[in-house]
Image (cartoon, rainbow, N blue to C red; front, side, top):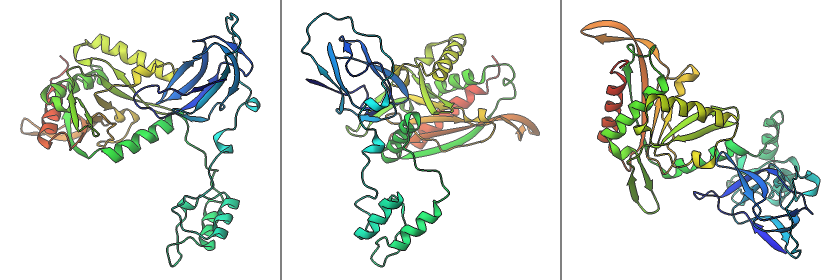
Amino acid sequence: MKTFLLPDLGEGLSEVEIVTWHVHEGDRVVADQPLVSVETDKAVVEVPSPHSGTVVTLHGKPGDIVRTGEPLAEFDLGAKREDSGTVVGRMPEARLAKGPEERAPAMGRPSAKAMPAVRALARKLGIDLSAVDATGSDGSITMDDVKRFASVIADAEPAEPLRGVRRAMMHKMGQSHAEIVPASIHDECDVEDWIDKGDTTVRLIRGMVAGCRASPVLNAWYSAQGMTLRVRKDIDLGIAINTEDGLFVAVMRDVGNRDDKDLRGGLQEMKRCVAAREIPLEDMQGATITLSNFGVFGTGRFANLVIVPPQVAIVGAGMIRPRPMAKDGKAVVRRTLPLSLTFDHRIATGAEAARFLKAMMADLERGAG
């Protein structure tokens, strides 16, 4: 028997969600034959079989979470005859190992103070004690606390584990909150002269390129563990793309050396791949700075955005609106584009961030040329 453990699929990803098994227990397979498709960090990755042999056990079913280093499958390598493998479909759930809902830990974290009878009531009612406010004199959770919480959530939908894209987003946002010291600056630029003539997203990319060249420290990776900064020459731009499943951030490579037509084609292909869930994992990794064009949703001027490590900056573009402003000494109404720059203040100074935003605004305000 040979046990296949989930390998490290790149960039320190600690877990995956099983999407589809391509084999059944009892199937003969050959090395490199597709074994299972998993979702990791918002991309679907196909994991090949590492062995030729017979599949004895498959660990988990679609929707289950498997951590790096945990068993995925077991093989019997005893049969040595040549075999071309099999073309297979989904594994029936009844034949697979128990899912996470069947092996969940007991309700309530050890840090929650409660008597055994209170814990028993919480288990019976399906309540996580860590979510219950304690009113006991010693900070412990009482029977009444549990009953009160149960009445509050009686009409709520049952708790479900986060899956797929939203689970990946949860991990990334938690990492950002734990590791980064964010600061934000905001301003808005006059885009009256070009907004009807150009491609808004391409213009934003061009503006970010100007900002990175004026303040290169914002186009960089920072390692908190090693306390090292790597300023990047190429600008590999992360583009935030919203979907019904959650937020994707796909990467456009070397945007500083691509013309407008190439950028527009790249954006269209990126959105198509994200919508079809066909985007390769490598196109979701390695961004050096990110753009969030949240204004396309019809609201919002400024935002305090979330930086994803190891990046040190993210730019947000709000909704373009007509606003009164002074021009040539007169009060006029012009369309303006609100911009937000959030940066890791451990790495960049306020002056460096201001230099970036000033250069970006100057590029955007040059007109339609």
